[in-house]
Structure formats: structure tokens, C-alpha cells
Image (cartoon, rainbow, N blue to C red; front, side, top):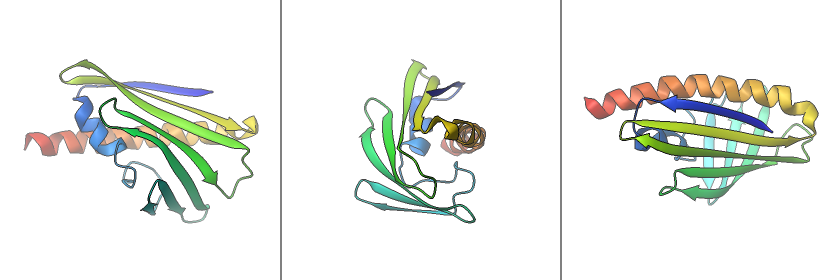
Length: 134
């Protein structure tokens, strides 16, 4: 299992506005567009293909998102990820993002993808926080 944790110096609500909006992809590198149909989102990655994910849990009160890959150009047996925000203080929260993938041979690819998304998430959250205080 891959696990990433990061402390944000903003409220959980600010981070949730980004990650808790299932069709918002400005923080996911390589994704050109996203279509949300019920609890299934379709992500278009030019050069890599199309991925479909099922939103299993979207709990705004608990700041928790769980999703599963249900269609991918890669021959996956299983992929499930969760993103959980924990409130530390009024303007501080921690993100715990974890993912399981099988076959495990795809873990390095997934790890690189998650690291890239986390880096872009930091930038998008900073802009989101600035727009709240403007």
C-alpha cells in the first residue's frame, strides 16, 4: 500500500474544495478533462488513454473520498484509493492519501503519479487559499 501524508497550513475546508470536488482535475497532472456521470468519473489523459473511476465514498462532513479504478489502459486487477483530511487546528489540516494497486508491479507508476499530483495540489490549494482571503 502506498501512503502519502502532508500537513497544510490552511483549513480543511479549503483543501476539501479542491479534492472533494470529484470532477475538479486542475490538481491532477496530465488530465485534460473529466466527465462525472453519477458516481463514475471519466478522466482523459492525452497520450495515456482514458481512465474511469467509481466514487465509492464522498463524505464532506468527514472530509473523506474513496475511489476505485474500474477501467484503465493498464491491466489492473484492483485499484482503490482514499483521501482523508484531519483537522489539526482551525487553519491547519493533514491529508492522508493511500492507495492499493494490483498487480504490485504498477506501484512505482502509481507512486510517481501520486507524488506529482500532491505537488500540483500544493500549488492549487495555495491559490484557493489566496482567493478565499482576497
